[in-house]
Each structure stands twice: as structure tokens, then as C-alpha cells.
Amino acid sequence: VQLQASGGGLVQSGGSLKLSCVASGFTLANLAVGWFRQAPGKGREGVSCINSGDGKTKYGDSVKGRFTISRDDSKNTVYLQMNSLVPEDTAVYYCATDEFRDTYYSPRDPSRYAYWGQGTQVTVSS
Figure (cartoon, rainbow, N blue to C red):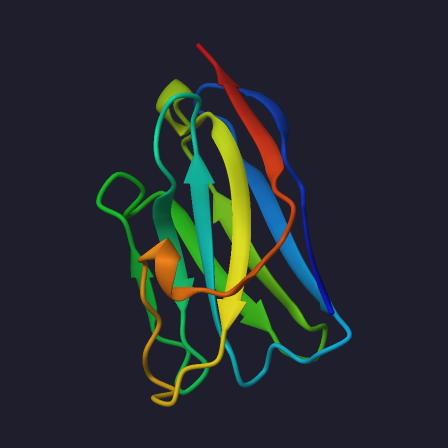
């Protein structure tokens, strides 16, 4: 059972990156998935999440309008498209998943998720 986050890298301010979170050993189709980030010296922040029931999404205020989360259950993958990146987006990005009784529920609180990927570094230069 594994989550693999990838797609990070170094990009200039204003650029874009697309992160992928691939599950192996289990299916994401019935699970909520969240993207989180942690900058040096800061706590883990909920960036975006998507539920399994109807694909409804949520975003943190700092990324709203710039980031888009999506899921492709046929590929067992959840994506995070990040546009108009700024240096404040620099962090290690993690994906996480868990099964909630309410399939329309997808919290941005990292403490609600039990299963985590290893993280991918995103660095935005000014």
C-alpha cells in the first residue's frame, strides 16, 4: 500500500507545475485525497482536497484561483495543477488519503488523514 507523489521541481515565479499522486496496492476511487505542503520552519498546511462522492473540491485561500485538484480514478491518480506560482509556494508537497464514512467529506486538516506519500519538493524562484 503506497502513495507516490511526483512532479515537483524548480520553477520561476509565474510558472506552472503539475503534481501527481499515484496509489499502488489499493484504489483511490472510494477515498478522499488531499494535497498538503510544508515549508521550512512551518506546520503542514492543507492546500486542496477532493472527495470521492461527487468530486467536490476545496482550496486554501492562498492557492484559490491558481491551483486545481483533479482525479482520474482510471489511473488511480490525483493531480494538482499549480499555476501562477510564487516564492511563497515553495515547500515540500505531500498527498494523503483516507476513507471517510461520508463520501462527500474531504477535510483540509492534515490530522484527519492516515495514509501519506513521501513528498515532492517544489521550489519557486523570484
